[in-house]
Amino acid sequence: MITISCTKKLFELSSWEEVQDTETNDELFKWHANVFRMAKRNNLIIMNNRTRYCFILFGIKKEHLKKFNSLFIEALTENLRADGFPESKISEYLFEANKIEFVKTYNRSVLGSMTDMVKITEFLLEDYWPIQEMNIIDLNKYHNQVPLVKLKSYPYKLMKEALGT
Image (cartoon, one colour):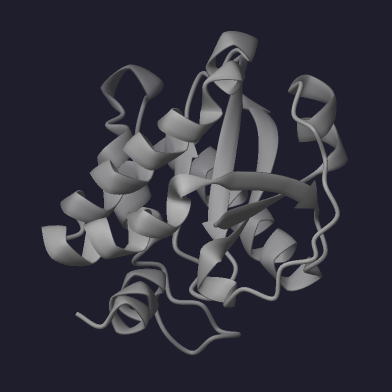
């Protein structure tokens, strides 16, 4: 099972049912998600608790949130493929995504890392990557190659290690 910890703002935007986090799953199967406004659109950032591997879903509307489970799996698969993860490892990981539950956020460190990535996105879009030229996969690959001081590594390397590739 995948657990996604959502901010209050995201719960208000979505119609997801919040459950109590009773799972003691490995942090590798726990994610945080937040909604943010940029370029006059609602966007989501989703970040793995253990590795800080993340991706942004740009231009999210309420109807997208209704089919979030499939959207999450598609986006995660696409980003892992773009980062060169073997199909077998992606399939193994996604086997756990047969069920997704939504809980309150609880890890301030992950929230801080998400805020940093949103600020980096803002900077990139303002000065280097005009929105009409943006490729979301390239942007997500860029985010996962930003060194994280707290973890002393890069998100894509930590995810590769965690998945055993």
